[in-house]
Image 1: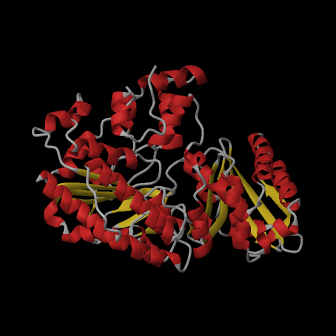
Image 2: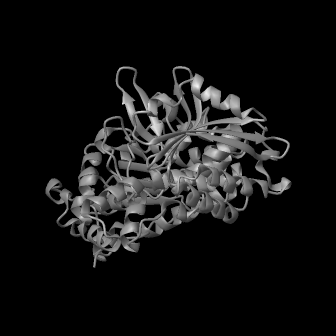
Image 3: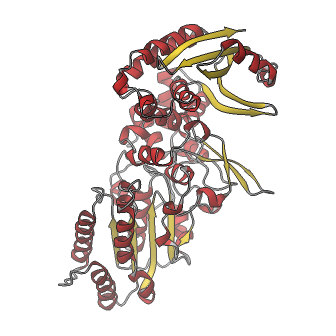
Length: 514
C-alpha cells in the first residue's frame, strides 16, 4: 500500500517515513544556483510548506534524504549552511500584539536550534543579531526561509486600519535583510499573496520554468500514482483513462504562466487517492473568510469573474494596491490563467476546475442566497434531480420554493440592491452547485445573455427580468440571436425567461420554450 502524506509538510518526515514523494528537487537546485533572494506565491494547500522544508533539508546538508532524487546527480558539494526557518502560519488573530508574540516565538525557536542567546527585545534588532551571530559562529553565510509570510495580513485585509499597521510591523521584521546581504547565502519567502514590502526579491511566481514547482503535472500523475489510479478504476468501474480524465476534471487546470503546463492541486489529489474517493477536498480544510470579506469590500460581481480578461499587471500586483478582486482571486487560486494573447499580452482568467468552482459557490451561498447551508443543499439536491430529467420547470419550482421560504430578516436581498444583477448572481450561484456547465453574461454581437446552462442533453438560454415581462424576455432572446451559436451543437436548445418580484422577494414566474 502507498503511504500518501496527507497533511505532512516536513520533507524529512516524508522521506524517512516512506511516504510518497513527487520529486521536485531539480527546482531546488535551479532556484538556488545562483539565486539569492526569491519569492514564490502559490495558493493554499499547494505544497509551499513542504517546498520550504525541502530547502531546509538541502541547505542543512542532509544528503541522505535526497538519495535517488534528481538533485543527487546535480549537487556535487552538499555544503552545510546555518538555516533560519520561520513560519507565520499561527499569526492569524489580527492584532499587532499577536504578531509580536508569534515573531518572538519564531526567533526563540531558531535561536535554540543554533545555540544562540540574546537579551535584545526589539524584533528587528534581534533578527539582525541572530544572523550576524550565526555567521560569526560558523564562518558560513546564513540561509533564511520564511513560510506563510502573509498570514497576519490576510486576516485583516478587509479592514481599513489594521493592514497598514501589520505591514509596518512586518516591514520592521524584514528590513534587516537588505543590510545583511554579505551574511546571506539564500533567502526564500513564500505565501499566497504579493505585498509591496517584498519588492527587492526575485519573484518567480509567473516564470514558466518554475510553473510546476508546486502542484502535480499530468506526467507526474502518470509516473507516481499508478497504484492509486488502479484502486479508483476498480472502485468506480472506470478505465484507466476515465480515472485520469476524472482527476483532471476535479483537480487540474492551474496555470501559473502564459505557456506553462497545467498542474493538479496536490492536497486534493493526495486526498482523493488516500480516501479512494472523488470529492471536494480543498474547501474542506477551512472557509477562506478573507475572500468573502474582500468580495463585500469590492462589491464584486461574482458572475463576471470567470472569463475575466486582464493584463498581468492587473492581477499580479501588490495586494494592498489592488483596485478589484482579481489579484486576490488569482493569487489565492480561485481563478487561474486559461488563455493568453501574445500580441496584446492579454490574459483570460477563469476557474481552474470543478472542485474550485463548486466549492467557491458553496461558501458564497450565505452571502448571495441563504445563511442556512443545509437548507440550500437540500434545495440544490431537488433542483439537480429535476435537471437530470430535463425538467427545467421542476428545477425552477424547487428554487422558487426554497427562495420563498427565506425569512425576510435572513434574505440576503434585504441588504443588497434589489437589482437584476444580484438576482442573476443568486441564480448563478445556485446553478453552479448543480455540477453542470453554467456561464453568465455571455456576450455576442448584439448583447449579453444572462445565463447559459448546459447539461449532457440540453442547452438552456436564460434571460432574467426584475418585475418584467416574460414574453418580452423571450422576444429579446430571439432578437439578439442568443440561441444561434448553439443550434449546431447537437443538443436540444431551450429558451427560458424568468421574472423576479422585488415585492415578494422571490422568483415569481417563468416561461420555457423549446
